[in-house]
Length: 610
Image (cartoon, rainbow, N blue to C red; front, side, top):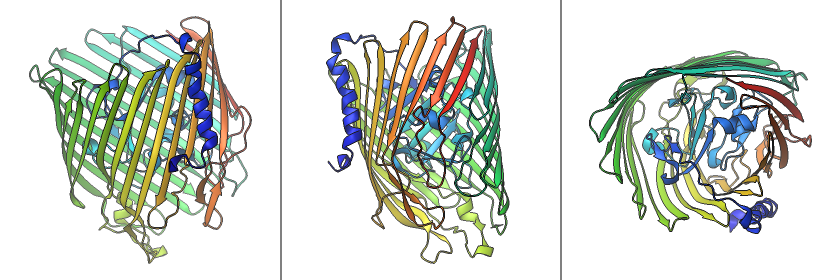
């Protein structure tokens, strides 16, 4: 198999991890897992075990135990996820989900789309972990439900907690190397049919010298964040819920700094119109202001997305339901920098979609269709179909086909740079993709196994045209991939391993895509010893192509393997202490050519629940 070529080392490590649960099958417990619900796959609540898509859910406790420094560090071990940070904390970080482009993943915060309209996808490096209650990840095309951007998949970050008690709270303080510190407080409670929660935190660090060029000094990072949620149940048939979150970040880089202020708001009115028909009216708003003061002057970018959605779910019976909705979205960008001239500032998009889901056990079926009417490029339709079945009580398989698209951003459409003889192209078309996937899941030999194999063809990719004075839809890419995961409990130890293999190329040039390692392995081993818990995780990647930051020619960045150690001690149910040592072996490596990564780090945190 071509995907396995030149990947013998990582494959052998993964297979070694897989063999362990077979050798100690008799020691593995058969505790039943708690059924989880996921919303991100089809914009409705579904049992995680019945969704016909590759999914991962990370809850609050897993976030706390990881002691990760940032969101990219937390998600790096998820299959299909590859990150390219240009330095330490707060540095610009690109995500290539399943090898797709960095703006081909839809980032949501409480369902609100984080699209900057100026090129980059949602700034994952600035989203504070302290705010997050839960993360839902869906890999594979979702444009037939969400519209633009969901070519690689969807990440839904949820800040609203599930409030169960009259009043509870938490306090966290952290200190670490590089003069890093974090303080967080969370409060939540319920009075009658009303729940309220708030969370506030501050993070700062002196950082590292991000780039090997420019000034040789540490590039610091600061982030102040706030999250608030409210809900009220007026009756069994009618409720209102709202969420608000924000962060204000300052991130230094050589000879410059970036100030970013982001706010997300959503409000949902839910009504049970009949016993079978539930309806939601949702108002969303995302706003982000960014100021980049660099060696070439000042760049200001202000983006705003407003969205009004009507979502409905009609349940025919226990096995069949139909979800449908309408979205109206307005996007605005105001962009200014030296030599730039903006010709327009906004566009609208109207979308209508429907999802039919049948869950019968013998044969499960999901069909979704969507049409987007965009003010700039007109109508664009996408669709997806998935068919799955259970083979006995422990084996499940499904196959899916889907199409997706990414609309050109507003800076590519409307911002000219006449001083540099480069001009926007208002006639750009959407980037389009089609994907096919086969998945096999099994409970066997004392472990949980999953294998996903996929092909993603992406056409009309936007790139500089032959004259080097504008942009055009001229590139094509093909990405073949395999994701294999195994999870098991072995003599009290918890083992989780994930291997991602990619075979990708630019079909116009025959060259591999940049910054996408073809082999990525993550391994996590954890155990509790009474009040003490210990975890060791490994992240390894092979070499990949990049761009030389000096001459802008092609370059190759070497592979690496990084080990982290996390330990915790629980004094009682309310108070615990956690230590994380990152890059335990003090590995010197790069992910982006010309940019540094962190040496060995240590963070110690004290967590108090009340």
